[in-house]
Image (cartoon, rainbow, N blue to C red):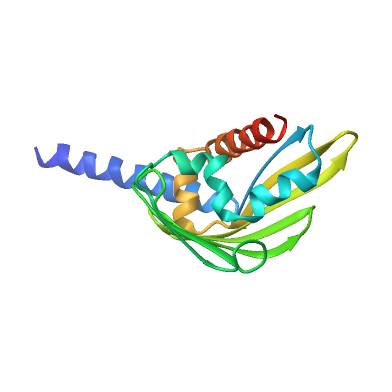
Length: 178
């Protein structure tokens, strides 16, 4: 009986060591980027992103927890605007602050996650005129702490977050191409 327990303990220790080693080999930074072409001028898209109140109309994260608590602060829109959320396990809690809003082409947001895991990233929206429309890029980048790298052993964060970015960009496209 003691031999069986010892074998199980060794196998478990090896499995944990393998997971930790795999996590240590993951990149120390995270970058997720998606883009879409929208048949609307950047001047119509920019206000939907630079005003956090407008995110209710297009952001996929707003639909994940209908009971999510939202607070707004700082400037009404653009540089200095602040948005904080506190929700269920699907959205956690966090805070965003617009650091740069260069109308109508670029918005840079400081993005802090507090729960379920702490993380500090930068989100960028870039709107470039393209023919009769706009090429819109949604990008998030930042350091990948060890917990993030551990999660990446089991989940593809680019795919998981990228799906949300694709849904949000599709929503922006639908709203502005009406």
